[in-house]
Structure formats: C-alpha cells, structure tokens
Image 1 (cartoon, rainbow, N blue to C red):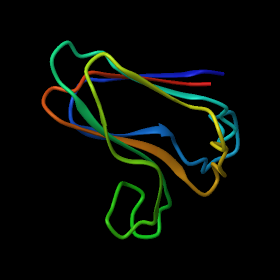
Image 2 (cartoon, helix red, strand yellow):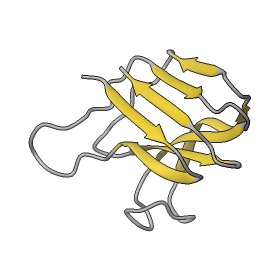
Image 3 (cartoon, rainbow, N blue to C red):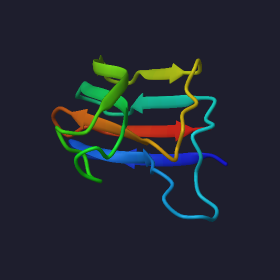
Length: 111
C-alpha cells in the first residue's frame, strides 16, 4: 500500500501514525520515501523523523525524536529518494515530516 501526501504550508504532519488499535493500518515496513519540492519559486527545509509519545501524543519537545533527515534544504524543483534502512516499529513510533520556508509545496510518496 502506498501513501501519498501533499503539503502546502509550513507544518508538521504524520506520514505514518503510530498503531494504537487492532485492525488495518499503515505499517512501518516501508521501502522507499520520495520527497519532492514542486514549488516554482521557493526552497523548503525538511525534517523527517520518528517520534515516540514520551511526553505527548502530538509533536512535543519532550518526545524522543530520531531523524532520517534534519534541516535539509530542498531546492526548487528537486526530489529526494530515501530507500535504505527505513523500516521501523509502528507500534512505538510515528513517522513525521516538518516543512519550513515560504509557501512550501511538497509531495511525499511512501511505498
């Protein structure tokens, strides 16, 4: 199952939410993460990280974060593909992305 996200503001979003119930959900068994900056004018700064809920279920400074990418500037019209060592325990962690910059336009595809 693929996951598709379109991000159009400076924000933090869940890409894969921690599994808290029994039943179908996205898992942490991902093989590839593609992030594209499709803006015509603005670079975007991104973080991609795993986060537990030590302090809060939402993004919180007290939560433990484990970064795949930290403060990477993605220039206009470029893409980044991560395809090595991405699997994680989705019963323990959320996979999140933070975007920063002027009017970021980012698409994310997870397979």
